[in-house]
Image (tube, each protein chain N blue to C red):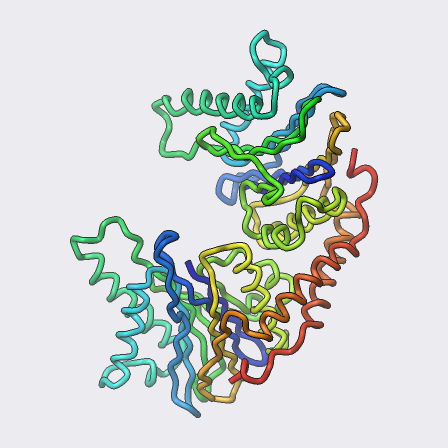
Amino acid sequence: MTYCVAMSLAQGLVFVSDSRTNAGVDHISVFRKLHVFGVPGERLIVLQSAGNLATSQSVISLLRQRLDGVGEHLHNVPSLFAAATLVGDTLREVLAHDESATLNQGIELGCSFLLGGQIHGQAPALYNLYPQGNFITSSEDTPYFQIGESKYGKPILDRALSYQTPLELALRCALISFDSTIRSNLSVGMPLDLLVYKTDSFEVPSGFRVREGDAYFEGIRQQWCGGLSTLLGQLAEAPGDYWV
Amino acid sequence: MTYCVAMSLAQGLVFVSDSRTNAGVDHISVFRKLHVFGVPGERLIVLQSAGNLATSQSVISLLRQRLDGVGEHLHNVPSLFAAATLVGDTLREVLAHDESATLNQGIELGCSFLLGGQIHGQAPALYNLYPQGNFITSSEDTPYFQIGESKYGKPILDRALSYQTPLELALRCALISFDSTIRSNLSVGMPLDLLVYKTDSFEVPSGFRVREGDAYFEGIRQQWCGGLSTLLGQLAEAPGDYWV
């Protein structure tokens, strides 16, 4: 499984992905699921993937190979909408190739992508691409998307995140969402890859890898866990009729 | 969907169930999923159900009807293990009846049960019955079970609950677990049914229904939500290299 979250906020974009892939409980590996495209000063396009690894790797490989070609690619598409369309079309191309193979033994080949970034002269944008290759975009009402194992980490996002949340606080919120998921689900695991983009900076950040034992992440995990227990203890006691 | 949680702790047992059932998004109803059997002074047996409502209602109806019969029933079984076996067998009986019908049009008929309680002379116990009718029991290492829409509400249980958690604090923890689930998932809804049993009391509590707008529950929901935001704001800021 996988867990990825992406946020499109007033101050910019936040992307966090785990790196665990598994086939059953035996075949567990580390693969990067956060992929950065861009031209410094002009555009940043970040892709996160969940689902069938063969499919998502093929899509990313084709997108990278074509950057040097003459056709439309992620470094020359005129908008993020066009970028999302291109990724969806590439996904359909990979699926059409693999699904036509006679060896497709009932395996789920689909995968999902989150695509976010900014192209000079346009506002930042965030898209959620379905396994069918179509997509939706975020809004001020719904400023974040998740793909993969999303349920454990959703409550803290629903409670604490809004479009106006400052970027650094949103990053903390995303990290706590990952902590909740990692504690409750074996299929999501360290290290985490994250990238924060400030609106109109037109930088192409390389992102940061949070490794097992990272001092800051371990610190806030402990602070959060202790704080939650304290908070639970501070809630008013249940009235007598709850006990009857 | 449904969400039920049951805990077997040093001081006793806690059961909380939501009451929303739905078929798609249209056919939404309120049905009780927490069912109490018992003989005051001698035994308490609580059943919670998730899954196909026709199946779980049939199982509960048969168990109730047979309380007056001569055979084995929940008011005369010698142990909670025997009670869990009886419920599993009754589930298999219902499934065998309905699955043999020619009208089973690919509908999922299965359901899950949590069964907990105490019989005089024995320790309290808690069982998780699978849709196949077999079951597992809780332990000091794993003192709680969930059925239904369990993921949203699992992180707080994993963080804050242990076998030694006092009963009243465990109840608060369960209520917060429900709040997290209700906020993030439309298929779980109010009112909630809850029941708290103190070990060796051999009472048969009627339980309490937490209705929409309940002053205590609303109070702790707000207190929790505000507390989480405060706690998130108190975490250390991410170091500079997280931002690169």
